[in-house]
Length: 198
Ligand SMILES: [Zn+2]
Image (cartoon, rainbow, N blue to C red):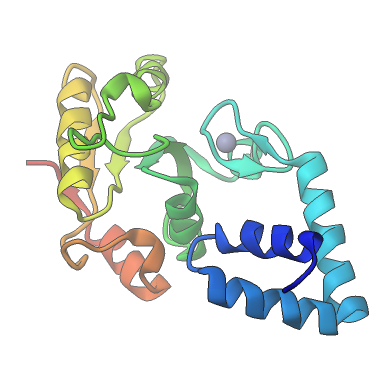
């Protein structure tokens, strides 16, 4: 039986996505054995991020400054806006380096099952950004899940009144696929072959 502190650390790690109690315990043991080379580094990295982490007030990205690096980058094309469900999707798409515009993070997707309604997501803010003008194309980069596609259709309808081109990722995406898990080549291809929302 481990000490209370070790138990607390193990259960905190067990809550991380992709880790369960078993792998959390293994991670704790691994860290304890590498106190100087890994544990200290991890503690410092976590503290540095905790001190500076903010949500971008424009797009919802998570960064160490507000506006985030993408919104503040003058080389980014302000006429193109890519809408994603989560920050993880934004990071995945940006790793693919195909999209040179800016992003908008919804903070989830519509779900009747989980009771997630349009007002629970950052859809109102998206409409405001489009209504301000200066945007030519909105790329709907929702996951290829039923809920992701429902969300995309809802947003496409809300944006119909505005003079913008609305496109979505090509359906080279595997059905049920979450963007975050796709390799960069597949994502880049889905972006390159994006098509108008029908
Ligand atoms: Zn931003």
